[in-house]
Image: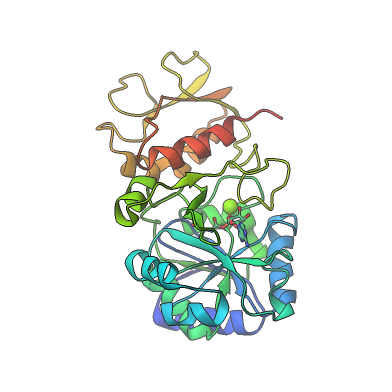
Length: 315
Ligand code: TXA
Ligand code: MG
């Protein structure tokens, strides 16, 4: 027996009850699977940090199901609401100033005056949030620093019985986490490259989007730990000539690759395959390492390169 449940309406209702009772539910989103709890229940939120083995100074994203809810929760202006209407539901997270001084949110925000909010483009996630009657705090549903899950079985393998319920909604379409932007300053600052490209944001806003690399030693700067998404094998990036003992993950026309993220060089397809392929490569015990082809640094290549760079980091 395991705790994976197909995402039927009945099971989503059961999962919503679990959230209301302070439990932990893993659920699919458009990007990766999240490990969810009621944002207003600090004991439940503490359970997320414990299950992941994540330090509590790394804040969580709150997931909402209706745009109209945003102003109750965070400081908004016409720019924020316009971006929300255009890009939500979708792979974009906003960092905003907190409005609700409810101390129940302190742990979710790691005591910061800012809050990260998103609306996922996944019918299962949206139904779960609505039925729970509360925003859901959710990091990716994997052990701290390891590879993010894009299927229910990835969650089971990483967190197992630490989760009360895993809702199975199939494979996540986008496959890399959200793009995170800080909207508390005049300029839009990208804190994490992700499922929405910088180009799309710039085209829509007509503004240049700045990139923050944060302070890698202070994880309150989001997702900026140098070592993250780490496989147990060593991983080399930008490889055109793999060693004999390396599992080779290709991109584009790479005939000697063991697996290819996208033989046609499609960055969206590559993003969707990335984490599952890294996991698979890491399980191949007859290889001593993983090598990845060069990936272009545009569109979703920004997010892919960010993830594999961190995965390749040697402590
Ligand atoms: O695609 C996603 O964003 C997934 C799905 C489940 O929604 N979630 C996700 O969460 O990737 P997580 O916790 O793995 O990464 C969220 C990042 C963290 O690196 C955290 O530091 C940053 O968001 N973050 C959260 N709240 C913040 C805040 N108030 N200020 C700055 N950064 C924040
Ligand atoms: Mg994560």
